[in-house]
Image (cartoon, rainbow, N blue to C red; front, side, top):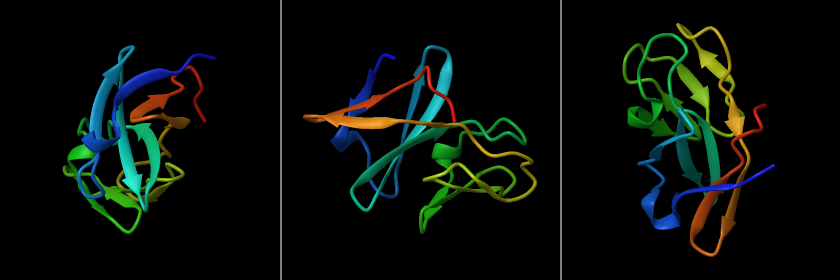
Amino acid sequence: MSWETVCKKNDIQEDFPYSAKVDGKEIGVYCIDGEYYALEDVCPHAYALLSQGFVEDGQVECPLHEAVFDIKTGQCLREPADRDLHVYPVRIIEDDVQLQLNSEA
């Protein structure tokens, strides 16, 4: 399985995730308490980038219809979304944030 560099660590802030499009996938990369997480960036309810939503307490709220997801697990916590998000393994190499894209949970 290959790792893809998507951004630098300083591209991500706790309140401002990084939105990446890699291999046709839109992915949001988040930093929570110094740990990095990556998940599907498009809300499954209707097209909206979750990385543009409201981030608080390890959760992201869709900016369009207020569905809420757990950033660490991708779990859907509030409708109108009807499924969990795909999450991607993340590793940090020096200042590079890398994702393993061919692995979906």
